[in-house]
Amino acid sequence: MANNSGRQRRWGSVRKLPSGRFQGRYPGPDGALRNADETFETKGDAEAWLVETEADIRRGEWRDPNAGAVNFLLYATAWIDERDLVPLTEELYHRLLRLHIAPTFGESDVKDITAPQARSWRAGLRSRSIKTTAAKSCRPLKSIMETAVDDELIRRNPCRVKGGGKEVAAELMGPRWQLMVFIAAFMALRPEEQAELRCRDVDLEKGIVWIRRAAPELCTGERAVGDPKSEAGKRALRIPSELLPEFERHLRWYAQDGGNGLLFVGERGAPFRCSTFGRKWRKARKKPELEHLRFYDLRHTGNVLAASTGASLRDLMTFMGHNSPRAALIYQHATEEQQTKISNGISAAVVDIRSARRKRAASDTTAQAREA
Image (cartoon, rainbow, N blue to C red):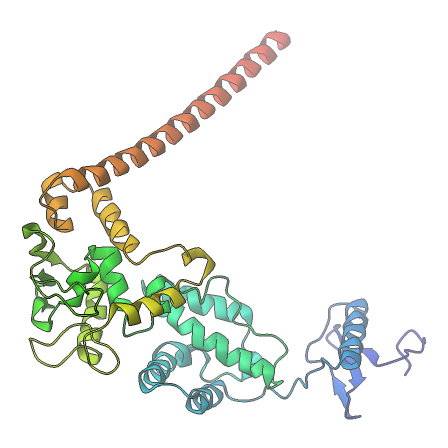
């Protein structure tokens, strides 16, 4: 095929459009002539694109640019319906699609969704202070688009937001158990205290959880229901406002019926077993950044967060459920040490700034003296 310069191209052709841009044209694997799905600013760019396209065809990596002309919402809905998902996960994915994904991508074709659009969409969710929802929504979107790659509708998955689908420990545990992780990390409850929480212990209107009993599991597997570890363990804790929707959802979907029903039960409705929960936790923490994290370490996280708020020693003791101030003092001291490190770092920065200013001032003085 001849191009505008008179040279013979071995494969494909390039022509200049009335707009001044250049268009590539090539024979597809099926023999049909096709135009490039984009135009180019220079002829060299168009020719480079043809070289890459020919190489893709030779490697068997070429994708029909029209194959992805499939409505995203229809494709995504079919994707969910075709998966062998448990009912709650299927319901979750349909809800995420309807409320958070489809409003942005629902009217687009699969092939028209770009990486910048995916990043902008995620940033929009996070800007509305729904970071957990953003992470949950990224996962099905990424999986849907990955299937589109497998179906040869698109060449590359556009949902490549770094960290977009990164799951915190709570999300890795799945929807039934993630509230336990949140409570441990942000309210510092002991596992045995969570095991005996009842629905009546949660007051969503006042935003309070009452800790009245505990149920540690013995080596025999039996639950030893009784008082908390100490008298101070009987306490009322304020629920962080960010967790109120998680409590409401859990009460509606997973807790036993009635005020005396357990807040946390297994899939079959029985009190959860530490052995079963432990297997789930070990599986969840296979992520490299979680592999050494014990579930009880989350209580440590909650205590550190509480101490960092500047709470008094007495308030920390109440939060942690301790009779003795010893543990509360440890966390207060840890926070003080961290504040000292921050203060020292700021001081060092101030010293550097002042030193630089003195050097500039000295340099200016020397220059003025020379001019005089």
